Length: 258
Image 1: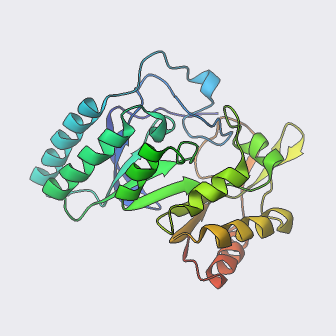
Image 2: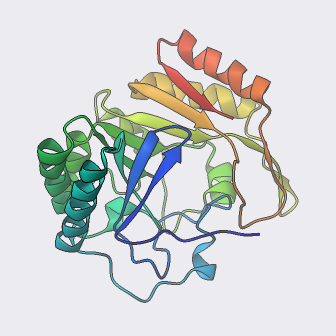
């Protein structure tokens, strides 16, 4: 099915259903995808379909482009609601991600003081001290936890390399509340197996993980764009609303995107 790659090193701004007017920062080149997950719902396609033969962007390249775009937007009278590190893969895997965050914070403070800085990450590098420190600097540290079931993670997120969900939960909890947990709920079938993670066997343990992490917010969403794998379907709005109500009952704010 149809997927796309983002421009690099800056893309957008675009209207995000979750973030508002979002100016994207892409630590990956525009020619391919570099990710530590291979999610079957990824709008950028599967890793094997988007091979990348170029290096990550340097912090200098990213920051020069970000400064130019912010100045351009300021001249046009519309600055972004949020500067979002996302792009074609996992931003925190870029060697100069910490330096890029430090520089982006300085540029934001100078040129767009009302804009937030967000990072959309799968969290696989969040235990590295330099990455952890950088994520503590941003306004919205958005880390993925689609489920706590190891077999379902392998089916849906397809981590590249070892992935220990217990370690991820502990890492996310180490942010002491400075974290937003992002979770994809969906239905459908893949390789003869159900992709429905809205049942109690998945939601109950996920809620228990949220209680341990105590994030500032959870954001739950479902399939909204073309996916690289056929057979994926949206979770029903009423199902998402029920899950969100259970999150809020824990004292954790929850945003829903249908």
